Amino acid sequence: MTPYAPDRRQVLLGILGMGAAAGLTACSSGSTPGATGTTAVPRSLESAVRAAEAGRTTTGKVRSLSLVAKPVQIDLGGRTVSTWAYGDTLPGAALRATAGDRVKIAFSNELPEATSVHWHGLAIRNDMDGVPGVTTPEVAAGGSFAYDFVVPDPGTHWFHPHTGLQLDRGLYAPFIVDDPAEPGDYDTEWVVVLDDWTDGVGKTPDQIYADLTSGATGGADSGGMGGMSGMGSGSNGGDMSGMGMSGMGMSEGDVAYPFYLVNGRVPDDPDVLTAKPGQRVRLRIINAASDTIFTVALGGHDLVVTHTDGYPVKPTRAASLRIGMGERYDAVVTLADGVFPLVASPSGKEGLARALVRSGSGQPPAVSARPGELDSVPLTADMLTVATGAALAKRSPDTSQDLVLAGTMSPYAWTVNGAVYEDSEPLKIRQGQAGRLRIRNRSMMPHPMHVHGHTFQLGTAGGTGPRKDTVLVPAMGGIDVDLIADNPGRWMVHCHNTYHAVAGMMTRLDYTT
Image (cartoon, rainbow, N blue to C red):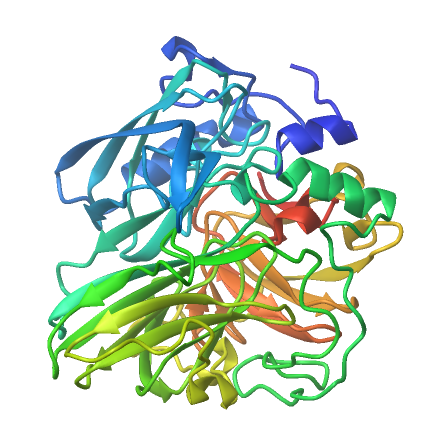
């Protein structure tokens, strides 16, 4: 099939996707009703993709799961809201497997338009990655698709669409991959999913994007240029251009949302974890928001961060942590006796997201109460050290490539290396190479940059920086990350701000032969 270049409408319909189309057909896609379009991996990589999947360590177990995307009505603190979700809940019910399991996920699309499912953080086979036009066919309205892959790595992950602005509805859910070798030194677990919410109560995502691109301000906050405070050097981040990852100057987002949610609940009708004093609780925190960075704290407690993006780090105590869109942090807390607010403060925006931990008697604090822990300097990824055994193999880079991030609010355009996606030149790498990405942010906003199909190490491979797949790059700052090309295919590299991605801030990492 002849490669083609997408127009802007196609990019909107297939966010992070509609690139050149040729070759590799996804497993079962030819006989799966509703799977339309083609993937874009050239035939020269087909055997490499199959070999990589066959070479994964497996448990020998097969888990058959099901997933449905459909219109639903949800209760937001007494407000009935129509939206789209996975199943009947917000967030969707978590999927769970053990590292090495083969999962077969029967997906049905009951939405009125085509959709897709991307398995965020899972370095799975390329043709199951869920990016229409690049890796996996879109699933038409009323159609279905059979996802089938081995889950390679344990950790806190999640899934969401890669189609249009669908992520800024209710289409997201956790994907927890257990590690049978992990000691599990905690008494109970709480998955905490953060979101910014507009669907059904404010403007639709499409209306917001139309306002942003037209220069209108209704429903969108273009943000003012703030101070440059909080910027310093990062210990694990390589060349940070004089600014650490905790830098919080400039604007923090484009959209002012009516609500900010924890586990699909508004602050005046919070989700509640009921436990006992002295119990150790593992928090799995996922930022599923489209345009909001959060600072997270649990009143009266410190967080001991143990993982980021699924990979272990040396336990690090912090009063609060800063989490960009697409990032995940695991933390353990030992509960005191009482009722405590878990608060996620949206950076640069009014409002908060709130849940409660109840380990004893007492009245909860006021809905608007902000725990003092939010006044601390939040933990960021550059403050973490990779755990023993979790680093990449020590390698010098075989190739170094730049990702220069830039953009403006008027006109509303966001670019990588000076081009929007449909005009961009993909990054190149060969299987087995060690690659360095030099990410430099020349814009006035932070950008959570996500690489599909791989994890990278902050700083140098084999160094002390943590392993991640999404990193929050500060305004006017930068960071180097190293990865190993061990998962062949064509992979998206993009900002996880949904509106920035649709406006062009994405490119690809293509394996060459």
